[in-house]
Amino acid sequence: MQNFVELWVYLSATPLFGLTATLAVYVAAQGASQALGHPPLANPVLWTVLGLAGLLAATGTPYPTYFSGAQFIHFLLGPAVVALAWPLWQRRAELRQRWRALLLAALAGGSAAAGSAVLAGWALGLPAPVLASLAPKSVTAPVAMGIAQQLGGVPALAAVFAVLTGLVGAVLAKPLFDLLRIRAPEVRGFAIGTASHGIGAARAMQVHPAAGAYAALALGLQVLLAALLMPAALGLMSTARG
Image 1 (cartoon, helix red, strand yellow):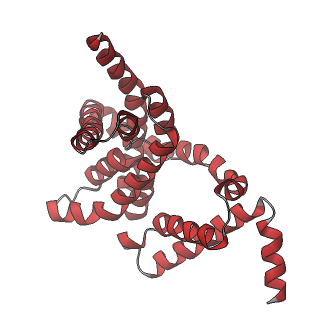
Image 2 (spheres, rainbow, N blue to C red):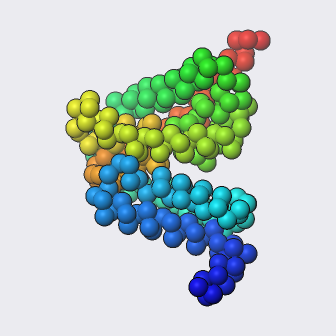
């Protein structure tokens, strides 16, 4: 017990705390998910977030202290997204045949995701900065933060909305698809990647390789379309008001 206390004191005072805590909690959550057969409610990202939040609250650790170590994992987000291009390359022939339909589906899905969130927030009387932070909720968090800032929103709030959207999609997508009798893994993957970005794509990768590939494609298309069209739409609205 004394050795554990000494180890805790050492880790909590160094950047190793964030790195060690993240890896330990995720490995435990992943192991539990695998033992249970990867059910949606045992999503390891969801339980890692909840576990780390509980740990920080229980120990009184400030978030900046935690992130000083966790930033090493955060850095790997970019290479991980780039690695999603490999399953797309393996399916390049079918993507060439379907690119028009996929582009239209991405545009329609992204518009529905952003429009429904903004309209719901507007109906609830949320202030403009919160609405601007809601708009890119279905875009991966780093990009959503940049888009929200351009729209006049709060980048940190946009990141929270993006993570929550991804977690909800990863947990509820399979029951919803089953209810709607949507069986094709390509359709499932593209839908969850459109609505729930990287977290949804990670879930799709666990279920089926084709679903994971199309989820990665949808994720990339949403990043591109949102980064180009959302600021342009804001500019048109400002011009119309003027």
